[in-house]
Amino acid sequence: MNRRNFLSSSLIAAGVPLVGQYHGVSWAAPSPVLAGAAAVDSNMLNNTPYKNLLLLIELKGANDGLNTVIPYTDPEYAKLRPRIAIASDQVIKISDREGLHPSLNPLMSLWQNNELAVVQGVGYPVPNLSHFRSIDIWDTASKSEEYLDAGWLARTFAAAPVPRQFAADGVVVGSSNMGPLSGVGVRSITLADTQQFLRQAKLAQPKGDERNAALKHIMSVENEIVHAASKLNTNYQFKTEFPKSGFGNQVRTAAQMVASNAGMATIRLTLGSFDTHAGQLGTHANLLKELAEGISAFKAAMLELNRWDSTMVMTYSEFGRRPKENQSGGTDHGTASAHFVTGGRVNGGLYGQAPQLNRLDGSGNLAFAVDFRSLYASVIDQWWTGDATKILHGRFEKLPLLKT
Image (cartoon, rainbow, N blue to C red; front, side, top):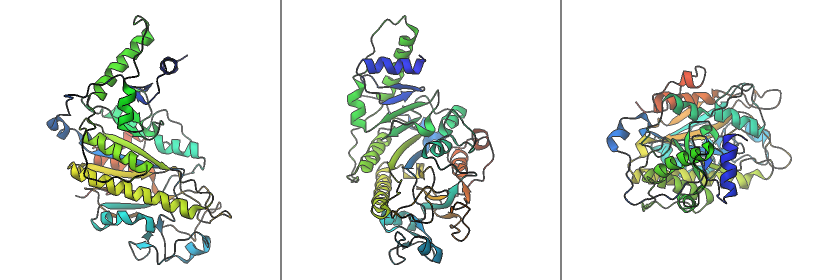
């Protein structure tokens, strides 16, 4: 039995719910002491590139880019989607060719403030249409035929470590999958919400002979988790009203993590499922509404904390949907899609290339215009001043996502 399985089995045997990962090991934190916990020193925060927070939102199941950013003037769009095309009079127009789904109306203030970047045609060469494999490609920033052990964020933090004074390198909310934070050496917390984390923290009290090397390792990891948990303060009372939905709860939890001023470079949320093979119209509209309301609320919360200018929000998904609707009023697995980047310092506007619906490939799918690793390279080099070429194992064109 390897060390990770031993640790997990030991905690499970003790009746401990696994709620996190630290140094690549699954864990549930021991009892934290919140009273008087010290926040990250502001001078230290200002002297690290990780003063800039990245909020990742995974659109799980593959979001339909064509009904998110809609080519409403292209006659091929309505031909390919006679039942599920969004009528042009319902589209929120952002150019003379493109518009947003009506459910995304809460994002329009971001667009009007030049804080919303809409990136079209995001994908990669030789796309894989398996959910499991394609999200692994996105999480690790690998080539289609390449398998990597560590996520792209894990490699970023290995190359340029997050300050040890930070509570964690990253926090994953609403999922047990570490995604781009997967990898040995990553200091990550995963939780459904802050209160659950603090309630479960007191349950993990491993017992045993500390002369046993594996149990000694447990205690070492637990001590680091005490240090991390002791910094989390969830008492901030936001004026912002968060959406009353599952995703809204994730957004509120993320905001509380930032308000704790404990220090973390990234937070990842998950919204889904966007795997709309049937009855897409209603499901997709509801999901996009949750997304837009959640992002809008997160901006409001960051403005309260004076953190909006040091926050970047970016969506991602394993692939897009096929341009032609299927017989079940839905769409099947496709390739390129559209994604959003927003923040106080984001240079808003349209990026990439509008979908070429008259130039589909032999499978009826779209060609990509922007390699998804270009988004990552932009984050690493411009947001965190890292070395994207080294981390991503190649050179990718960066997008001018930040205001100069």
